[in-house]
Image (tube, rainbow, N blue to C red; front, side):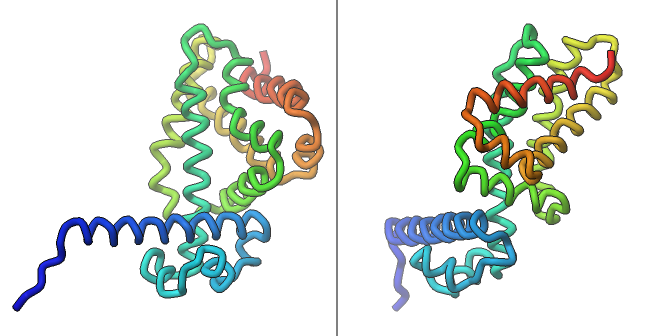
Length: 211
């Protein structure tokens, strides 16, 4: 006599599985922010998540894969925040407006400090040599660049689009470096308004280039 699993039981199991996966990601993110990839262990993550090693194997396959997915999701949140800022800019936006929107997620992390900044640093460190899985975020990277180039083109109509795209990439690289460099630590010690006053003109200058 075959047994039939009722749909509501299946849904409850699915929800429980998703909660376990989310808890593992949250625990991994906290530990990665504190210690980096080389400083976390499977035991600590599972203990903090209230899960077992089998759950890591089931949802991610390995500790390495769990860490990569965790950092990838943190990067995705960063990109989503940046895209929201860039999408909100209209055709009258200035280079300073663009710089503020482009750098907003980084400025927020610098101003917040603590785990927020530690997470951004972890993402920036791995971003120097990104895992293959990050290819799925190519569309979001491209969207952010296109929106930035759109505003740049309106402000610098005589500049070639390839040059504008290059400037956007350079600005992104500069923010990535800032997260890791000692000067980023110095800036993080400043009040939020001082962070903006210091960083926005520098990013705007990178967009403007030599004129």
